[in-house]
View 1 (cartoon, rainbow, N blue to C red):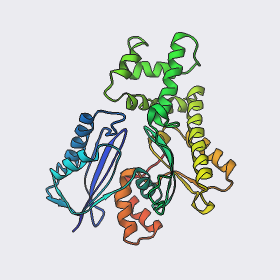
View 2: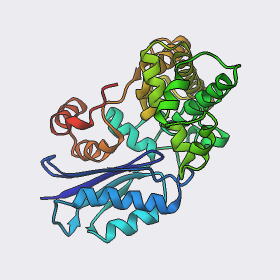
View 3: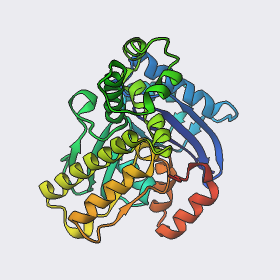
View 4: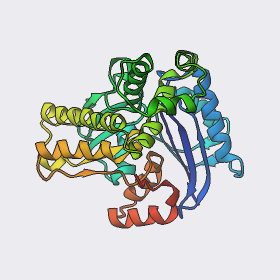
Length: 322
């Protein structure tokens, strides 16, 4: 029986799962992020080690037949830590957008709007001849519009103004005071700048923004709609710049920022369908981590509806329900 390892890691997390030919889950792990634009190299390694230790803690094997991974971080660290534990027969690296297409839509090609800790929009096209067909990917200082970091920065800048007496009213200031255990509002400077991963710390506020939006906080809802607009503008740019043909324009979303509240996705879809009537804009079916099992079934020639059913049956915890 063949054993497979699937791993997904980026700015906010490192997640992995071990499974076999029958799609039986043998082990899983979840730890912090590995993207060194948002964390240190030492912390990235520590998170890889933690994740893999969880995966293999109850499994005694000396090799895996296929290792699927999408890893936005120091890949040499990943390889070093894997080979300390098992022998890898076949390594199958996937780019973040490729993994998103496999997990989100069980397809190899299409448009992918990724909004996690960072953000970018991709045309995943296997005949791209090495070109990266993308808008975004500039990181949290130069870009990442519509991402979790962008949302967090937008909120922090407004609540700082509110604390000083000139910002827009929002319950988010009190929510941040509580979540970050602030004695004084100025302690936000310490919390952010003394964090080992400040951009990830800022992006973590996306969860609070979603909670505030569910309480009908006008500012929170406005920020999430703005995030949807930023993602839509980047998608439109990619379609127009690369002249994506109509049959390739179906858009799949992925990434944690979308999960905060439906307002972001709804505004994104509204803008795209205003520009391109009838355009398919889809929420993802599974977490990024499921790219390994999804690719396994697709490469076996299993049709998309049946593959989706099998994955839902065997891996219900990884179904996306936002």
